Image (cartoon, rainbow, N blue to C red):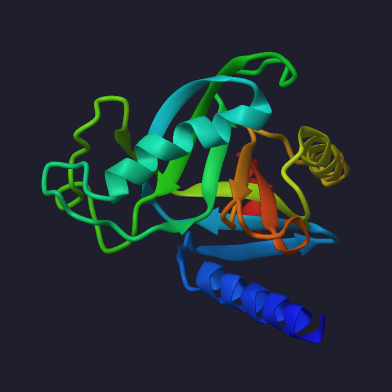
Length: 201
C-alpha cells in the first residue's frame, strides 16, 4: 500500500513537470483586480481547426488533426513542439448546451513566423496570425465540465461589469494540461477580449 502511494506521488510530480516544461503563450499583466487579470498578448500564430459538436466534445474532436500537424503532417514533415494552452472558442454566440461550431487551436511555438512555419498537409488545419490582444482573464482549477466553465465565465463577466469594461470578442477557453492529468491538478483559464483603452492605464 505504501509503495502504491509513493508511486502515485512520483507519477503526479512527473506529470506536473512535463506540463510545466511546455512553452506557454506569453503575456504581460496590465492590471489585477481580485481574481481578474487584464493581460496583453503579443502577436502570435495559431494552428486552428473548426469543429461541429457540443462544448464538452469539441476539444477532443479538434485535438487529433492538430496533433497530427505538429507530429509531421505538414509540408516539411517537421515535428513541432507542443505548447500550452489549447484554446477553444465558439465561432458565434450560441447556446453552449447545443451542438455548435468551435475553433480549436494550438499555439505555434514562438520560434516560427508566417514565413517559416510549416504549412499543414490537412486543409482543415489553418495557420492564422493573431494581432496584439488585450483580454480579461480568470484562472481556475479542476475538471473540464461545462458547468465548471460556465460558473467561472459568469464570475469573469460580472467582474468586467463591476470594472466598467466591455467585452469585444467571444470568450476563449484555455486548457494547459493533457487529459491524463488528474482533474485536481488541471490549470484552466477563460480569456475575454476587451477593447476599452482604460484597461491599458
